[in-house]
Length: 225
Image (cartoon, rainbow, N blue to C red):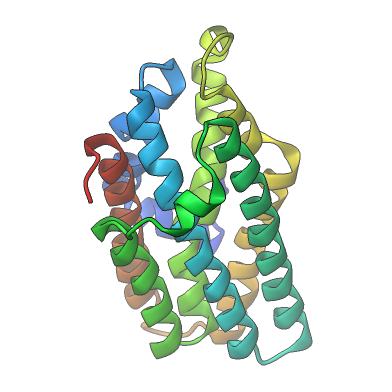
């Protein structure tokens, strides 16, 4: 999902181009697209993603608390609703892969899961709403961009690909709108909360979050605990 470079998200992505490429073009992602990812890797990812989403829901709850306007509260509440809806779809999807919810609830968190989710919550607690939303952005917007790219690049190989439903879910209109909303929210927050010297810190934050997202893919590919 290409973004105009003049948006805050576009500027952050450009400033972290190498890290962003390592994330959206990670071998885990490429093997999702061509259908060669081992099923045990995908199952491991699915289980950890369930735990991941629980903490992201908490992060959006924190965003409501951090909001200073009704508009921001509504935006955070919409994000929380989207995450909870995604979790419902995730549970159903995992069930289709033979992974019951009870099994996922009992899983220990992998190191990569702890690293990114706690990073997001820590930045949200220590900083303001803009910091929190920037920390969330590589996941929220990145998944939309990844899915669009996979759907385009591997269009002629999606038939029979066991991961096609995952790709099409994140490439679908509903999720794409969630990502667009995130980009717009970042711009609104930057307009109110940005200032001289703010960009450097936000870039550092975005880069670290992007690296932790790539680490989450690596966890899935290597079956790391």
